[in-house]
Image (cartoon, rainbow, N blue to C red; front, side, top):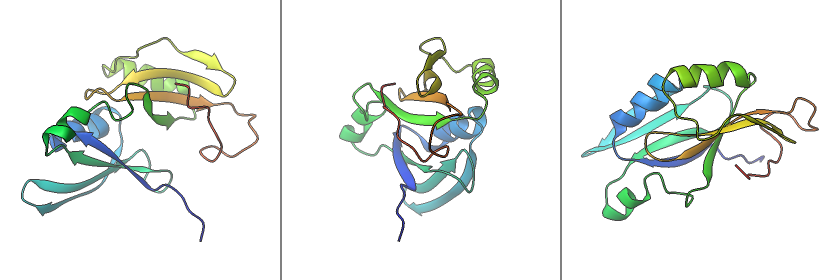
Length: 145
């Protein structure tokens, strides 16, 4: 059976604040929001319903988890949001108040800029090079972000 990474957990301080950002600002789709116990929910969001990985928004419940919010990768870029139109999405995100940590730059793998979500996670907004030898979303990146 072919394998793929389907879901990545993002530890957040609050479900609703996370939904406000990921759905309200980034424009992700709410795939599922199901209560699974006292103060716990199964909350899945994704940029697209049928393509790519989803994010499981997990509310921090312990001191260690609260300490990990925004620091899951020790300050490196954590997530890579691919787009087919960097200029369009960069403009839309900037107008929505997303703070980019750098100006857009052109790298051998595509056009990219780092932004930070309200919880401290660093993201690459990236438009991959159109002439790369693998289909979008299926090839390697250097993860340098």
